[in-house]
Amino acid sequence: MNKSILIVEDEFVVADDLQLTLEREGYSVTGIATSVREAREMVKRKKPGLVLLDIYLRGPVSGIEYANELRESGIAFVYLSANSSKQILEAAKATEPYGFLVKPYRERDLIVTLDIAFYRHEHSKDVRSQVEVHTNISKKEIKNNTPLEGIVGSSPSLLTMLDLASIVAPQDTSVLILGESGTGKEKFADYIHQKSPRHHQSFIKINCTTLPPTLIESELFGHEKGAFTGAMEKKIGKFELADKGTIFLDEIGEMPLSLQVKLLRVLQEKEIERIGGKQTIKVDVRIIAATNRILECEIAEGRFRLDLYYRLNVFPITLPPLRERREDILPLAMSFAEKFSKKFNKPFEGISDHMIAELQNYDWPGNIRELENVIEQSMILHDAGARLNFRKPFSQSNLLKNLKDQNVTQSAGLAENKMSTNVPVNESTLEENERNYILQILKKTNGRIRGAGGAAEILKIPPTTLHSKMKKLGITRTHQ
Ligand SMILES: Nc1ncnc2c1ncn2[C@@H]1O[C@H](COP(=O)(O)OP(=O)(O)OP(=O)(O)O)[C@@H](O)[C@H]1O
Image (cartoon, rainbow, N blue to C red):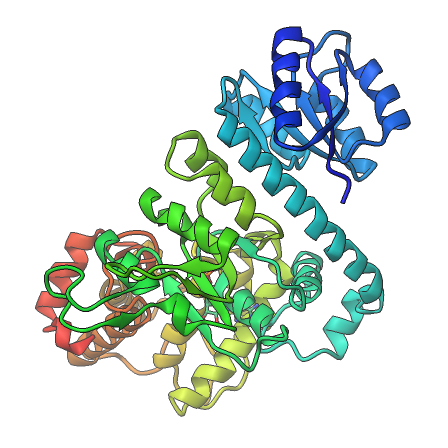
């Protein structure tokens, strides 16, 4: 691998110091350019493996503008900049750099960043060569022939992401799945595992928000007997359990900083240590991480480690929100309606025109999960002999109120555009429906009420309101 570096930096002292450090660390420095013009010429002549690029340079062209040329030529680059304002970070990010170092940086950060940058560049080459091998997996073929493990949709943006997932699946690289809540990140992680050579091994999921920080470490890495108060028995952590398989770390943006260091070690050294343990244990685990947070902002605010970000971000897949792929709404709705008609043993004779229009017009802030919930609610309330009708999404009200409104509307004989069931719903059925619905949501969130992806957020009501509703409906923890 070509480990030579071109320094593009117009401050002589900084450049000179960099050169000394890099050479001491075993890298070869192909030269120092003080402007983009010089850099272009040196890249052509010396063909460096990586460019360390200052953003503000002598001459009319900035480092960020030049970065686009480097990217197009397939040359890795890492920014060096004293300015890390949001605006600069955004502009830099758009050029897909292999790293960003904020001056003044520590020598150690420089070395780690370069190590990761070379590693990522090498892996992205593997992936690129796979793209060539896979050119026959066209989007059309995925759409028509390849079993998609329950992934519904044929919008170009979804198919592009499926293409990427199919390409990266057989590779042993980490994958970072980005996207708003409910866009299908876990579904994609599952798909990647199923399509990987590890598919006969375990696929272990862990949600970094559902466990208190004190428990995550033991959950991930395990502990020895007596490691801390309450550790009565030895516990094998998820990483050991996932050995030879895949681990899915959902909501990675929520992982405490102290654990991020340990995760980095798993990625770099492929080893773990149980809490209270003395020996290191080798693990062979592929990591797929997901988040709905903007990790760059988390990094800028000191909540996420840059080195871990670069390790995980070897192959990002960004899932589009449902409102940006409206053509998928109807196929998804149909597939959920069929699923729930079987589950609730209700006939399904298609979706009413009114409902189709409402589904298409709504913006789906909770994405596919919200659509699934709406279809589930509608199916619960659906009657035989009619096409499936729409009930206002939960976000606009609560179920009880909607049903009451609907009762009033029906008894007043008004043909208002609301979900309609043909028979009036009595109060006990309303309560039962609401109770069942809340229980289902709580089951999906593993009983979690608060926070991102919690039941209150899905139901679009404050957690305190949900608590009092649960109390009123007699829902206790044992029910969940
Ligand atoms: N393309 C799809 N086809 C069919 N079902 C889907 C698709 N994408 C997601 N789903 C379903 O939508 C629901 C939400 O998906 P998933 O849990 O994968 O989203 P997520 O992005 O991981 O959500 P969160 O960020 O809240 O964890 C799940 O029930 C999943 O099975």
